Length: 460
Ligand SMILES: [Mg+2]
Image (cartoon, rainbow, N blue to C red; front, side, top):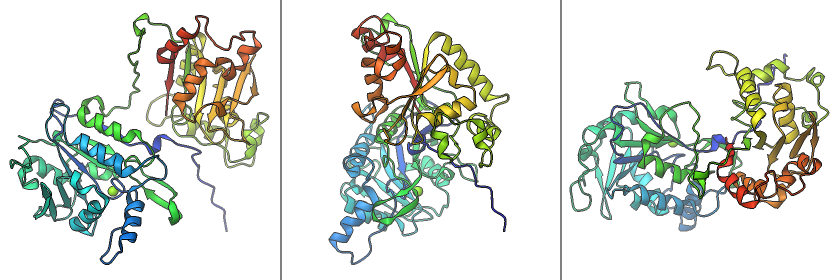
């Protein structure tokens, strides 16, 4: 028997938990969103268990919790969904939007309605369309059956909705629902956890869409569950992201460029220069992060010969982590040139949510010959057995205990803390006698500004 070489294992990803809203290149960017359609399974639910005839009230309650409530974000997810849906139903200019559920759940529209009803979400929607055929629409508090064309792909059905919205929302134009006027494909947003639903083999495309994240995890008493979903299940920001997207979809152009923003803040007009640039590591400096599983990779004494006999060569590590198959030339060389240039004028540091710790990040950067450009590396959350801080003095790296326990486990909170306690995050400052505790010289006010503008971070 031969042993298969183990496949590269990504060590961490956070970006993977967020929903992603995109607008494709389209003709009429100014056309407003008039319909928002939600997939049901793993988009509204985290995982779907339907209510069956004869289920007791207690069982129904458990099913609702399993379907909709998340153990990963504080508060009631059902309440978050209700308030998001309420906000989506009325545009900023006061126009009513139609909200629909578009599902391929084999149990059909009635079963989906039943679950939504018991969860207190049904009244947030105007219609439920189940593929390949069947649907319900709501007129005030009453739900009525309707016929929908026999269509197998969501993008094909939405193309028909765009052509004749009245067929899919028969209540349009009644006192229950003012007519929405002409509709186009541009006017429909589909929220779904499966990318394939955004484009039909027929050529029909959903032009504005929100892709809900999928993930695997240990869930309640169900053990390890694969391919779970649910908007907002891991990231509270999902609700706000979708609301902003539906209001102004053209600010979410499908593009692979990075996007830099300065928020407005008091004294922003004074234009203090940037001093410190903090990079995320996973999926920001790397495309995806792969590290040797060998625990010595987390030690500062780790060196190249340790890779001998492991599942990685140095070349593979560099290729998988840093090189892009999508651009010509070496991404690593370009990254190096950029960091070298930036490091001449600014202090560079890394703040990363990475379980392997600061030294593992450092070792990967050393291997890529990028470590020299940084002054400090911090990883979160705090872990007892793993060093969460490393700093550089005269080209030598030292581990230290970054003050992670003094601050909530959130990047923004940490940035505030860095502004106010720079010396605790950059031990080299204390070393060089700048023991005032801050990097700058202009006093606390300057540092407030520094947080708003002068620290430029890229989060994954
Ligand atoms: Mg789904």
